[in-house]
Image (cartoon, helix red, strand yellow):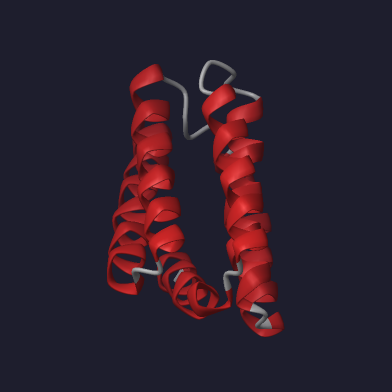
Length: 130
């Protein structure tokens, strides 16, 4: 369910991204890049990235649903990225989403968010099975 909502969020947000909002998202990407070696900070900035997209969508119901789902899965959220390889993959996925938003490329942004949600799900299952 989260995956569908995150994809919907990026699709709704994309046409609402102004140059200022794109700059804000770019700053979050830079902070995410800076946090690649910090397993405590990276998930927090990751969450900020997703919250920014949901807020930009301007759909309070969607934003509320995503917030609720994130709260329910928060026990795993902070633990799902625990290797340099996982962080590199997660960062790359965020970068692809950001670049697509920056270009106004809805198809790529949606597809990239779907991929990101799938790999995030894999990381959670990997954590649960360890």
